[in-house]
Image (cartoon, rainbow, N blue to C red; front, side, top):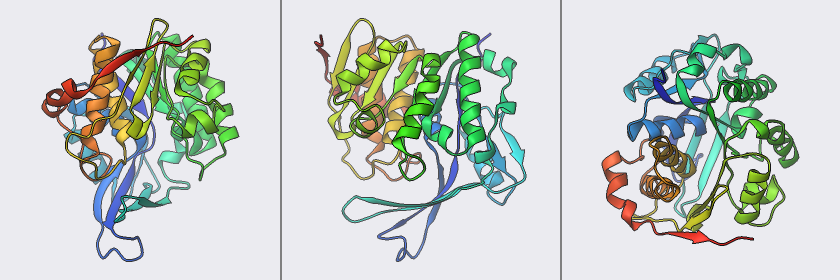
Length: 319
């Protein structure tokens, strides 16, 4: 029996955010963030039953992280506590809406994720397994774990979802491409961003070329996030596009793509059509950017559904 909708593997960091500049901000507010956690946080707020797989360090932030995740009803049966520290990142939103980040994550507890975390019985309980390229790049053991988790999930008949979340300050585009291509045969839903990841990793020119490439590699759906320019979604039957929406204004785009995926996977699990997949995704992301941070400004289900009619979807013809 499938008792979980989505299980996500990755790294979640303690987030300390301030104002102005890192050197001048007098105070920092505590939160938490990480691409794979941001996504299931959004999915959980929409009503899905989610699980998270990671390592949590046995440091003073341990209880804070666990309590926050439990408050979202995220299942932690396969999250383990180990000796070590939890990664921390400092961030500020500057007056021009640009963001400044500093990360302290090398050798963190989450970077020691490995394939020993695989639990067949746990995976069999879920409908979708999700992870990311950012998870691959935090360590060699994490990259191996992503490979093994995707392969195992695929062999168990579980739908797999993968976000090609590229960070050039951690590894090169060539390394990212090689790592993604190593696992692409196990990916059902591929989600790159345009232009950065489409251009730099896959060396393609347009979202439509990216969709065609992903489908040619066996992906069932390719979801191309285009930031302020909206998104494209394509499968073997059609390609659709929608502009982005900002119904409550734009303050901070941190985690917008993760909220987009949370909305997308929510509607996908609910067996909605591809057009409604787009509407939930665009609405979730468009509302998140009205507030600060990757998680604390995520909208409720009622808010997302209030604005989905603002999302105008059109079919794209592509030869």
